[in-house]
Image 1 (tube, helix red, strand yellow):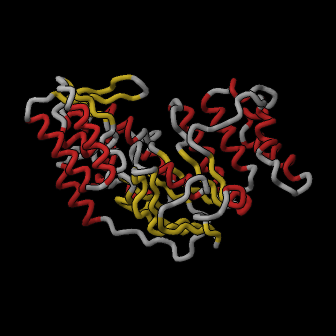
Image 2 (cartoon, helix red, strand yellow):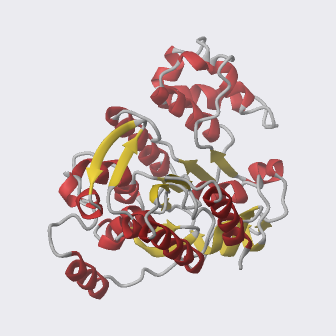
Length: 372
């Protein structure tokens, strides 16, 4: 039995020894491959058939929708839906929470939300869409990458390519492995196997400072600004490793022109900025490292809709100015709308790939987020 399945089986057996009337399972499928998840599903179904009441908490929507009779969905601590799996998977609020909003697009344009029978829609989509060709020349080339956290296999055999000048979206539900891939490319995590090369640099064994100096720069999830330093000090610290004379000062002034709110608040502590302003600061800080490839990790996370619009406008402007971007984003609709190409990640594996427009209209994207 695989280590992850043994661990979960042992934990469940230990809980069953206490003869519970209610068993709470917290992410039992984390890090498991599909065959292991099938075993967990069978175990949950057997326990429930034997009369045990179970509360299942899990990011894997295929497992949740497949095994549960009723589903409640939380978004930032608030319950937004409660019903049968079928009711929840077609709920407008759930689609918005998992797939994001499409700006001016209506929610009915969400992948798979057309009202057509889903089996018919999937079959029609598969017949219509042809796999997009990956670029022959790529500045980033990832092949068969696998990454683990102890016994948890977070990324399994992922391959992707990014060509100079592209915006490539990497989308997927929470816990799919998106941030793990970016952290591996940035040298913060070492892969178990596979390869990743950025313009000839082996990212699997390069240290983070070398990776940044070569032009691969990450804007991390959660912004990670220095809250007790001023806006200006945050920007100045982003240029500390540069050795190009007065250019850093000119670049700081340039990014403050791009993001005028940062110029207005340059002497304020960064921690006093709004969430959207902090995200602008994080992006500006990344740009000051002179990236040739900018990794953006969940730039819209936790922002109000109008601030999401501002962030995506800024991303489009940065791309128009010539910066290549690998965008990790849960807001699938917005990410795919600006992407040249995209990859859909599910439980650590690439499920789908194609142009942004192809994926935007592929019902299998919704299934990757909502199960079914």
